Length: 166
Image (cartoon, rainbow, N blue to C red; front, side, top):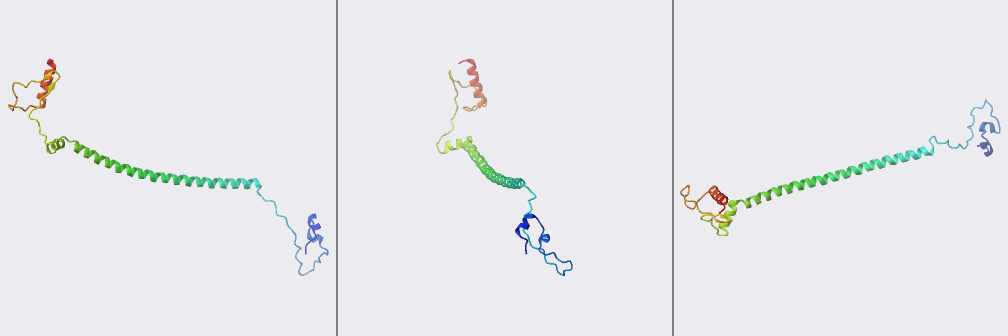
């Protein structure tokens, strides 16, 4: 069977410790007796294992961080696309409102509204006042139409009256 415990510790081989030597002419030699074998020391020291584990954990954490940053970047892009679409809608709304304001501010619409809703009528003649008094009408009308004068004529008269100091 097995060698005695004392033989195992001494390092003697089972063949030398067998009680009887075997004859060389034996047809089936018996298998050598079993013995306890200590595990061989590991090829890598413990420090190398720790470094390997730390590197693997670092790589995994790096990959996780990379995936997390990519997810955050994608979410930010979706938010940015939504804001751009909303800005385009608001820009179109702004342009529509601006056009509406321009239509409401047009002089022809204001005149039409004043005449229709408020019953206002255009004045028969326009008199410009100066700080020193009213400007007198010209002696003769250039077109022969009474009461009608152009804005340039009126401006020229006001300018002359202001220049003369009346």
